[in-house]
Image (cartoon, rainbow, N blue to C red; front, side):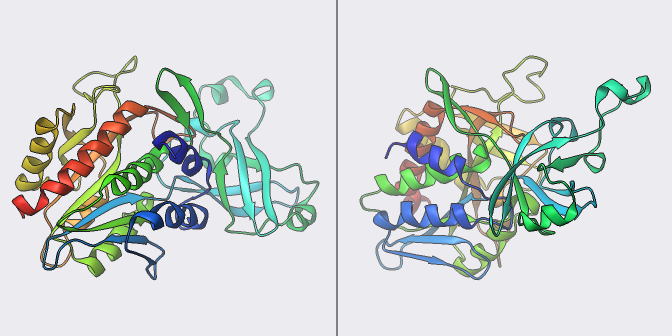
Length: 347
């Protein structure tokens, strides 16, 4: 499969944080032909191991499988579902979104509703409707019918968005944060015929709620070097100043210098820059982004792990649908594979 085909399957899969089963099964399927061993740890991380020479450095790649979403909080007597947010998202994006409630009986389609604007007072129309004022309408007549349809408290809810190609090498879809990192990791492992270092390709869980999967996986692996494969804000849209978000789509993957949770280890940053320049791979440097990635937790494992981040510029992350350039993803694959081959010279 091409990276676009892999990304499509991963993007369309359900994987709200803590409920990553569907994505996990795909990750195992896609990684298995290209690794020597594949396993799942107690928290649910998928770990594919590609063995290098004996006593070689251990490299951990981390791409998180989970996505932002919702959980059913209550079922009203009228059959409407109230929800909690899982992961960071702006309340302004929620109203009127089509969603899927994943029940034990199967998926249920619904829509996020609120008090109709026609009957709102003028001051109400000026306010952002917060998520606790919204509800999910699945067409149930009452609470009893909603329960018969299979809805239970705690059921995950995802956005009803399908992957699509929209321009020359441009795609839109759900959960590119971080299914594109997962696709890049799979493709990089596929292209590594032989490597001196032993590579641990990890699909992590629960990144969106505190980088949890990376924390436990890194403890078990205790790698010599760690790399998170994730997305970053593409700021090349109207209304965004360059000083706020300088990374641009179509200009190559971004290398994190520093973010809220990580100051990239100088040796890792040098490794990534050298790998990019020697292989004529376009790249961008980024510092000061308020968020963070799995690399923040990997770097603090046990006595410490030199870590860095390769990010794919992506527009509209942490919303129901995002947009990115497949060329940026392809260059991230090339950079990841090239960097892995150079690790023994740096560590």
